[in-house]
Length: 483
Length: 92
Image 1 (cartoon, rainbow over the protein chains, first blue to last red):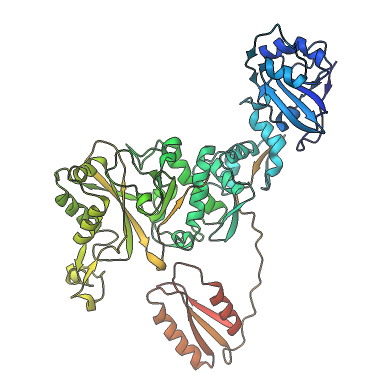
Image 2 (cartoon, rainbow over the protein chains, first blue to last red):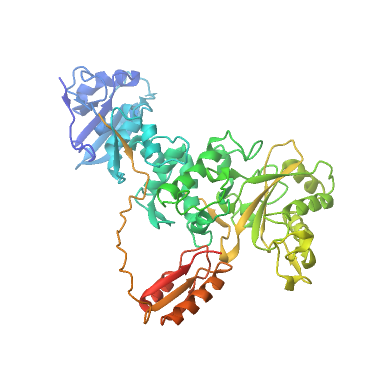
């Protein structure tokens, strides 16, 4: 006969002093050691068959509380407990270990020297999420929303205004706890104060929105760091959200972690098809919407917006880049994972299929960059220039560094006052007449962010225009990603 | 059994405030005019100041450092301390 282990689900069951063994009938290694157990006088916990092992009064760990709370990953596990504390543990069958821990010198002499155990039921991928919710769910503090049996949870999420207009993954406690496995930060840690409502956002709230966006747990540290970065006075997400201009946070990721989580820096880098690129950016916008309260028609006053306000996140193509990465150029140590946040509108294409030398390509870039927001408006806006690999090769072949490219662009983008004063060219927009004799740079120093990304075929690059720059508006922010 | 989802919002409780009663007269009121620093705001506020002063109000001008960010706490406090009314020039 067996008894069933019971207790408070969220507290760690106390194990009796002496030897403790955790087994399951399904495991061959457990069946092999089963005949030894009556000799041990051990407390035996069985995960599956309550009648296993035979000849031992095993305790049925029916809800796996003992296995979960004592971190049993492999069966059989043999432990020795003294004064309620575990002092020794071995997993699987290691004859030497079992003999030492039990103090029985000839224990299992007839068995092989070692045999690996099996996975504990408490780490079974089919069970682990519900076990985590059951035994560790009390770390979650978010309010519960009950979905009635007859309600469609997807529709409830739409109806409550929690989505960006696309369906979201329902944030169940199981999914949120799994998401939280992606970070070492505590669920109740406050990450930032999110505009426009100025609400403190915890790691848990970010995890909930990351689940909804479709993120994997390994994306979570990136999302958390991005939230920290956008909620700074420098980046000013309040203004980026509230403006009538069509901008949102554009996120550029750097470092080996971008490859580890499967981001796409190559073909269709700014397009559809990659989960990490799309869901990281989406999670950030869902946090602004749901936690910060920033919704279109509310504080978001964009006249047009742009599709990137659902998600605009991509990594730099570092492996084949002729240049130091954007993050390194902005002071991040080589090899670190980092994000750079830019207030940007939608991307557009620069075509030049003829240039084979740097100088004519610089002139093409400058000519297109000059039109950012208006060809007669200098200095007010920063820009990202995403150079495609085929264009980058032109600079690589000539040995041009990042700094040389930027210096040449800035030199080419000096605007004569006579061309940009109000009324010049028959256009009312422009700078005051008093600046007619001045020469003004299109971009402030540091106002061009150079990034290498895109597919291997196509003599194209991309421009992402910014928003009111500097202390007036938004300053791009770069942050190292914390685990 | 009902399914449980977790609330993705800030779970904010909004403080409800009632509007102050409309002042019976402008005479003697201390009125702050807040320029959010958008182009053109000053033109509007100059005209408002002129009219309010004529009505006997005492006008003080304030400005946000930039239109893209909320007014700093100190500025809000100063206005609240010194003024009985405030008018904001919202945009150009």
